[in-house]
Length: 294
Image 1 (cartoon, rainbow, N blue to C red):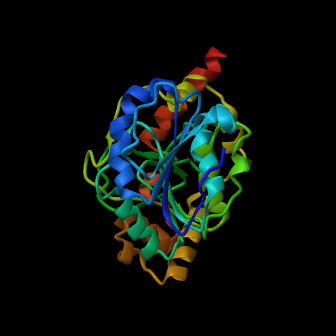
Image 2: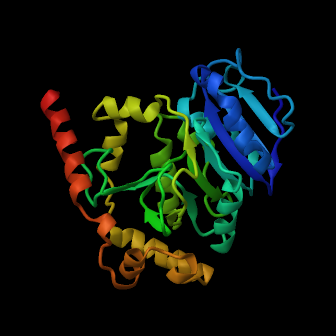
Image 3: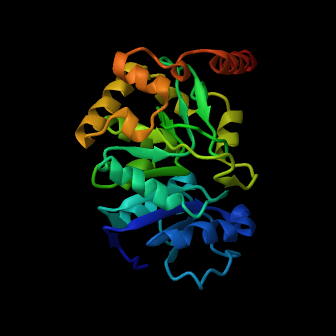
């Protein structure tokens, strides 16, 4: 099947599956008008997919005609047909606000492409024994008052410029860990992942079980094996953030960074949200429970 290619555009890329089809029409309606084009990778079948023919800027890729069931990796597959563009990878269970795309594009442009952007993100402890350990989580539907920095982005709310974050989509298809791969690619290419400030409920979540719940219930997954090998220390992300800001000719104040984070970038003192505390201790208890049960 021939697929139209795009360059120098604003592109959304989403994956979905049969169980989400009854819910997906309002999701598409909320985001498609904000984009030059939206790709949707339908993993299992397009049978039962809602009629969206009125939206001329949406392409639905039937997984049966491409790479089969790719699960969450399906949101990466369409990038084979996109180059030199602003890309937003999207989950299929959010209602996106009308200023979503413009907010992302404005920040990416302000940073000269030297960043990735997310609404949902987390901070790993410096040494992580379990993929789901966090010192802090920025929940997509919760308010964030000032700009923050994270080490793990949620790929369902991820934005970047292909001219500064480069990768081969085919490299994603061995195992499903889109969040981790995108976050590591940003790190390797010197791009901080900024967490957008926003009011409560800026994104609305349609409650349904997804991969996060499945993997978390599975205990020690392949994500953990990968995460254990990485030094997640703030000092590494401080260097990335300071270098990217300098390249873009920006200061922390220009981006409205959280004051504690800005202090950490300036002095090297680890910000409070990057230190172990109550949240990481609770996650540690969960991890130990998993070990006991195995």
